[in-house]
Length: 306
Image (cartoon, rainbow, N blue to C red):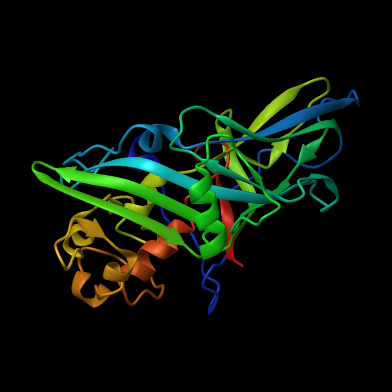
């Protein structure tokens, strides 16, 4: 997983809208002109989630900045908990074919792909409008068997939609952090590269079953830009030095409130706000927390704050 294949926030250019849509992403991979197989029939889609190797194992150091921390840190997750809700499958005209009521909570540090919901008996056709939410869990929400019940209770009580707990190390240095993000995010118009072309949503074919994975990218919390540069020579890197330095009391535990004490004005030249507002490092990281949700691996969605 090289960072050259990853993008930070791609908000587009809608004035005065913090969580705006992605910029145009080229020709769509399919149209919604009915059954793409020409034979009618039905198929199914299974929505799953996975945290990738970075979350299950570690994010390593990499001085080249291609596949790890450019400043030499290693991060190992203990938890990356997210709550998925409101999965909707619709065609180009917006006609809804399937939706998931309620929500389901997962810890994607726990290995392997996990099932969210299956939709069977869908008409064989293109579904260009696929969307989902990551929101705080509720008392009546479902919970994956791998989720620690105390963490679930904490997320409900504190209103966290995303919770991460990890340890960062570099040589003899070791820092721990547990961050909960009180954010609600809508992911819509999801698309991904399939067969070498960009495909909006997915295509259901007759008598077939496909997987639509809502991947969570734990490395996004450490990006040094809020939007990828239009200049391909300007990289996006993973950095931890500024986060480590935020441990003001030196107790080895980095609090989000300590990140709130770090002014982004002091990080100019190392971090790029990309035209967005983030007065503190806490605000910067919180923006990035909205981008952990992806679609079918490296696929992206328009991001809107709820």
